[in-house]
Amino acid sequence: MDSPWLVPVSLAFGILLGAGLVCIIVISAQRGRRAVAVASADVPDGVDEVIEALESAGVVIDPSNNVIRASPGAMALGLVWNQALVHPELVALVDRARRTGQPITEELHLHRGPFGDAQIYLSVRVARLGARYILLLAEDRTESYRLDEVRRDFVANISHELKTPIGAVGLLAEALESASDDPVQVRRFAKRLTTESERLARITQEIIELSRLQAADALHNPDLVDIDHVIASAIDQNRVAADAQAIQLVGGGDKGATVYGDESLLITAVHNLIANAIQYSSGNSRVGVGVTNRDGTVEIAVTDQGVGIPEDELDRVFERFFRVDPARSRHTGGSGLGLSIVKHVVQNHGGDIRVWSQPGYGSTFTIRLPQAAQTGTRVGAQK
Ligand code: ADP
Image (cartoon, rainbow, N blue to C red):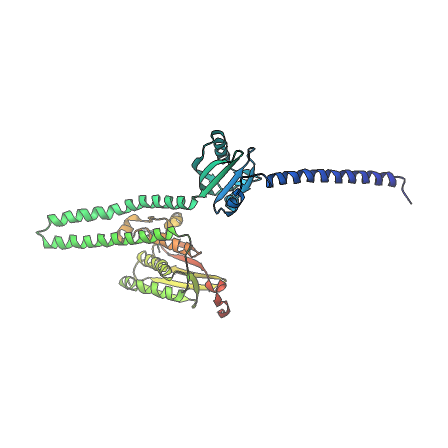
């Protein structure tokens, strides 16, 4: 049964296998040498320890622009990939520092990593390290840049928003002066002056609240918050306004929901939704506040039977200073900040807010928050 081909085929196979093995051994030996050369590149004393201890980004580059040392911060920022600097802007700085021998400091705006879309802002310092190497240090300034941008934007909006009531106060003061002999007019202007100053105070308060919320990405030291108490307080705060318009204000739904967060911020958020529901409803209607507590989520829905919001404006209502009907808001004294505050409170609590609305029928704003009982110690208490 032995085939006459068996012997030569086995021989050829053996030779091929042997040659393959020799190749693999040679290649691995070369790789090993290169890795060793990179790993043991002779950087000045203490540099390894410094790079290891650095919290920010630190990179050591050899004369061929290979990265021979990189701190964990540099890897996390995506500055190094395949033993090279990812960003041509950084390579250009390294080349310049090598050429001139002078240290360079620059602010750069880069993509995070080789493929990332996210932007990072870095303060970069590049200098020679001994005769052969270049040291690149980078501080991540992304967060402070973002905050600066928010602040600049905000200041522009604020000055615009404050101009109107401040202008009104000035005009009313002049009117008061010229009507000083007419007590009826004086009373009328004084009343309007009070309204405008209250409006100024409210806008200022909301601006402070919003900027505080925007400055913090997440809450520090959250407490276990009882949602029943949040809803009851927010309803209480709006009771007088609802009664004044003969609006029936009712709470209902699941009891006993808890979330981790800041109780006063959550009361503000639900208060703002209820205040809007009342403000944008006509008399003799109903505003409902319902809670659903299931599947790890607490939902708080505020429903009204008011004017509603046109579909193409729905996305914009959470923007700062946006009003669907500026004339109506001016009349009701709305600042256009209420829903922005709600959005930021909810985001800081790891939740989201949605809106459903139909002009002429009403609106439902729904806050969703992660249920505390899912992660907290109250799991056992759940039924
Ligand atoms: P404002 O202080 O003007 O009420 P908000 O940020 O609270 O500012 O709301 C933004 C805009 O969204 C309002 O001006 C209003 O046009 C619209 N809006 C908010 N809530 C409701 C609602 N329940 N029904 C109808 N429109 C609403």
